[in-house]
Length: 271
Image: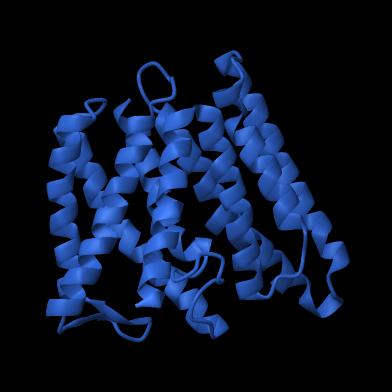
């Protein structure tokens, strides 16, 4: 009972802080996700055995350059300059970091750095872009809030349906607890939630919210499975114990970081 209470309390605090920062201002939203990115970087680095500070340096540069146009009122043409600088610094810092690795670990070291950037930094940078992908390019908090509601709906109902009705394993060698029934249950609930959200958050049409729900259902589950694969390789149950009863920050964002790039691409296409 105490464990359940601890899990419920920490989950409530986590969700409350997230929603508050999303609704309060674009600065609080961007700042929170920068901090969350650093926590996830720490957890993932530890999971894959990468002992280097360069992912923090590179991640900070990419995140800042990738989102500076959302903070500062700069001419849109300058985005190419910022993106170019960010890419150059990312590549330069990545290759420079091999000077600090052991000779026999150079390729592995460089590969882990690029994996960390692609798996953690790029998705978090794109997550922060999502509320700005609209006709006016202003901060629209309902977009990112709706995305998280869909993700939470998918995770919750996939767990409930899978636990009570799951009989057929989805991918047993990676995640023995996930079932096909749970996946379908989460998807159906997410599609229903998208219709409800479309009536509350009118920044996007019903069709667009349904498409986002589909992306969340499919790629969110893939993200969960991929993190499970990394944890199985590392021989750990959770990415950390930062969130009592829930594991680590990466455990809470595994679905988001894999779905976010595809949501970003879709929103870019429809603008």
